[in-house]
Length: 153
Image 1 (cartoon, rainbow, N blue to C red):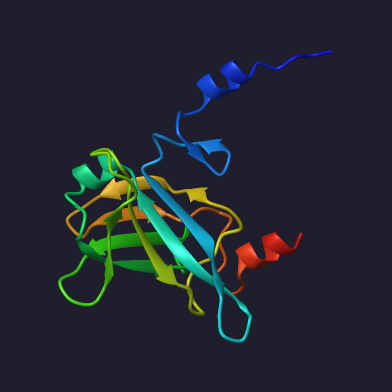
Image 2 (image 1 turned 60 degrees about the horizontal axis):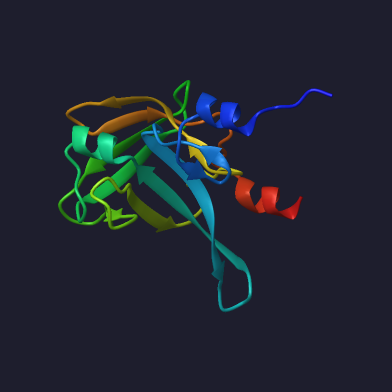
């Protein structure tokens, strides 16, 4: 038998839980979440974007800021940009009471938005004057709801 230590597994990863994975150092997490059912009984989904407190601080975003999220699905790798806006946009809210809580926003899904089968850590996050530029995970689709597909299995 070959025993595997959970302590060693935990130490080899980060130290906060996200759907069974440890991701405290994950600056940007993006996911497609189940949001309930509509009046016709069909499943609804939303896009969740979550910023670590460190990333939020470095990019000078705070609780209550309004943001827009732009995607370039033609680039390779596919890229995203989170930018602060003054008017229409989505509000960042704290995910908890701690001063180190993540900032989160959820956006109701519409066709053309990216979807993911599970929560994904975004790589190559860069803070620029435009906002937070990041690479979308490989497990991403702009044409089908990967979360719904994942839930059926």
